Image 1 (cartoon, protein in one colour):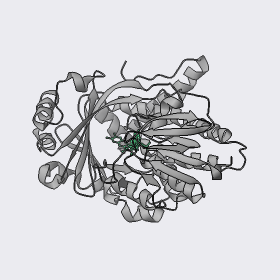
Image 2 (cartoon, rainbow, N blue to C red; image 1 turned 30 degrees about the horizontal axis):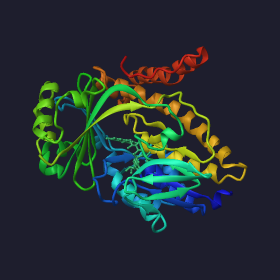
Image 3 (cartoon, rainbow, N blue to C red; image 1 turned 180 degrees about the vertical axis):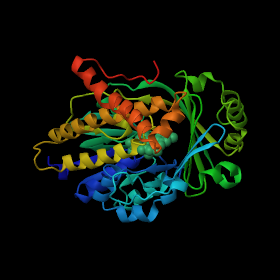
Length: 421
Ligand SMILES: Cc1cc2nc3c(=O)[nH]c(=O)nc-3n(C[C@H](O)[C@H](O)[C@H](O)COP(=O)(O)OP(=O)(O)OC[C@H]3O[C@@H](n4cnc5c(N)ncnc54)[C@H](O)[C@@H]3O)c2cc1C
């Protein structure tokens, strides 16, 4: 059967799945997206995402959505300030200004996750997305896939693409490889009306991002276009810290008490992030897929985005990788040079896994330095004007990202995976 005649099921309507749906529809293919959310507005979407020229923006360009992106991105959201735990400011892009423009490789324009999802949804044919479709399992029956959803519905497909994120239900049908624990927990928080609930932090943010580093503890706050704030507190911990801590994360009093105790050297100003009863807290233990993961390609099922290569968010690559996967998979599936879908999937997966091995290494490098006592120094070296300090930082980077994995591969050792051993 030709790809034009196949029924393609994309599981998951996140940035990766929706980008793929758009790109495949542009090529005239039959696509349905099955999404767990009951409707598009059922949950608050996360904070601002910076899209990179050669990945996220390349996919949007191919999807013909750059004009919509430019109408919705937030130029001020990319401005970063770096402070220490006492809010002493060390680096301020608001003051320095930024001169990058579209097309410039360093330009990383930010867009809130909600508007990005809306742009992608608006670009699809009506009824492409079937909401309230929480996939439970798939089974191959007489050469076709049967999809079973939590609401009792079923559907069939010739080709399945698992774009269903970190805890993918599709992944076990592609590979048994499991993610591993990195040693870091992140507590995600989101609060409405930042100017009212966290006025001092909001003032410092000025519509952008605030990075703060203590002794192995990191707090990143970002503003959203609707006035709400998102933040991530991250630290080295045991794997099951969230359950073992005994904290009820629905109770902001308990979370604040924990913060005051564990972040006792931090200024009380930070407490305002934890003082509203509306604030939503989600503990997120950080896992990563093995950097050297490999599997044999299938003819009718594959993965993209976090389902394929879940990793911590400390390099800002997850969404960009998901969208570039979508671009490369759409190109491979419609490339007439491939005689079979299996060949196309094999070509795509080879590119995707090789890219992840490299980006994942860079992500783990960031995860490591951001949670060490000298994180602030490293951050300043990276962004500062002192060329010598920058050279030292980037030498460490190049050694760890390129040279050490290369030597390990030469010697047949598997890549270093744990962030803290
Ligand atoms: C707090 C936080 C901050 C982050 N910050 C950044 C950042 O700044 N930059 C960056 O690049 N990345 C960031 N990331 C990572 C980024 O969010 C992901 O890498 C990216 O969203 C992956 O896209 P995706 O489409 O593969 O998966 P997802 O965005 O996870 O989308 C998966 C979709 O599938 C749906 N789904 C899940 N299971 C099922 C099922 N069984 N059946 C049907 N549907 C299902 C979900 O509802 C969801 O809509 C961050 C992540 C977190 C948690």
